[in-house]
Image (cartoon, rainbow, N blue to C red):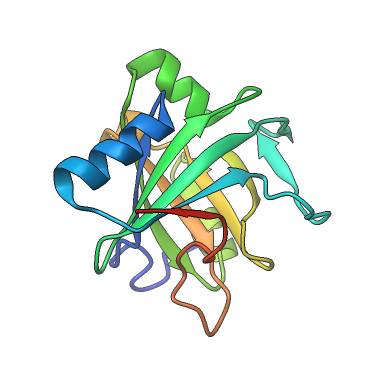
Length: 169
């Protein structure tokens, strides 16, 4: 299957794995003047439609996520909390650092099929924080040095994280 045109042409987000989310947020605000920064627990409380997969099995992971608007790109900080995840794998193997870049789509199937045909599988996936969305982390680190995330976006949105959670800064 051919890769849909433009599938990986517009980066929406850079994701960074951190050990101490609160300290990193304070540093971004104090030193770099970034903010406001929104913080959420993942999965969000009260959502009964959340599904999660980790290496093909039901995912039992949680995390704390923070989002900062950097103009054309969103910065996501991820602090793994409970359970095995690609986030915890990265932290265990590499320490803190840039984990992924994210692209959005309205139809993930042809992209997932194309990547599978090229030896790239989905390591972790699940329902996104915005109802109707879904995320897919691909096994790309050995091929390109970092992870690609694909998000099924909802029509009528900018494809970024929902404006929910505690706002800092």
